Image (cartoon, rainbow, N blue to C red):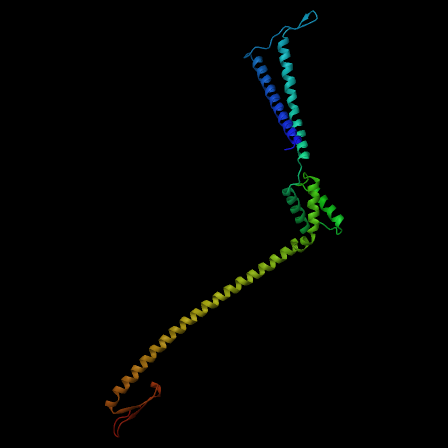
Length: 257
């Protein structure tokens, strides 16, 4: 560590210790004076003469004067603390990336909103710098931080124009419309799938019923062929019952129409 840094650190420590000792002494004298005024402790006493005159209660007056003087010095501590803080900020100043990022974010957001209108590089940077200085949350930043943020914002002006709030809103609206269309199409597809499933089940049910009817017709044909010959009728072979033709086996026998 450099000697200058060690000296500065030692000086700051000694100043802090001196302020703490002064505060302790001031409050201690104040407590003693208050205790003496209520009779809890005795006043300081000593003989004091000015020429031929003797000063009565010189110890009490001296104690009150010293207490007031020491306590008044305590009011200089905040001023000294502010001076130390200012010196430390100037001595240890570094551009904080968090401050730069915060300033750039505010400036870039304003650029996306279309606040800045200057086209030339110098005027654009100056316009952004004035905006940062007038910003209620960024006015306390260092000038170097504001200048870096303004220059970064000017360099990203084309990006801010491309992704402006209007363009982003339009893009979001377009995506929202596409999402609604996709959801509608998905709903229609689901309805179509349900309809297809219903038709498939219905078809299977109809096929089962048709097979049952065909089996019943086959049994009917078999029964008819077994019953009619003993009655003197013949069934001509046909594939369907409705196409079968029944004819008598001999003359004089009864015909069924």
